Length: 82
Image (cartoon, rainbow, N blue to C red):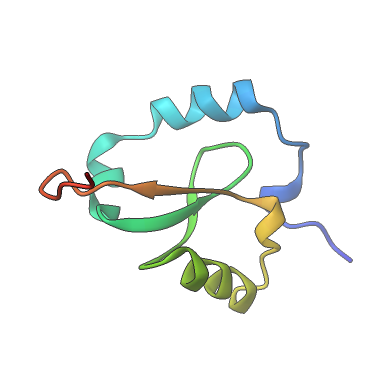
């Protein structure tokens, strides 16, 4: 089984967080209110969906092992989650 570009390294949380902080806010803003999956390096978003379940299904459709991604939710700044 060939490795995919997002699996070339083991997960390093320090590297992920550093790269994630460098990800442009204006690019992240287009995912407001969505669930997203990052590559293990935290340099790109590999999938997005309305719910966590849909994100998992989307990753499977794309042939990406969900265990090889970091999932998160991008809050919509115009929505209260309290």
